[in-house]
Amino acid sequence: MAGTKNRVEDPYERLANAIILQAVTDYRAALKQIRRNPKNQEAIDEAMRVESFFRSGWYSQLTAVDGEYLIRRLQDEVRE
Image 1 (cartoon, rainbow, N blue to C red):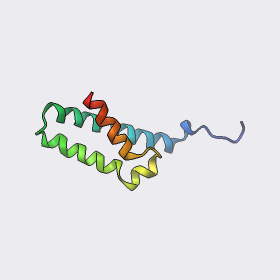
Image 2 (tube, rainbow, N blue to C red):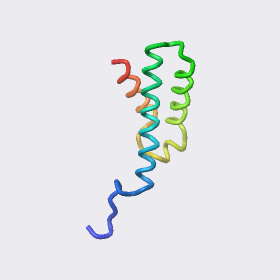
Image 3 (spheres, one colour):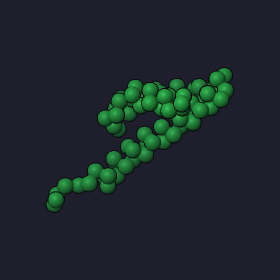
């Protein structure tokens, strides 16, 4: 397939994926901290920052994955 570029090898795509994966990791960690200590203001603030990112225009430029869907999935995962 000459002329087609593997999307996985695209450095911009890799960077976008890395940014999103880091946000997912941070959000999951914050939710777990909140579950252990619901009054942990630092964890609550972090979760709110990441949710804001998932709802941002920048996030929607990085991926086609719906931010609200991702938030719900991660909350469900931590709740289990």
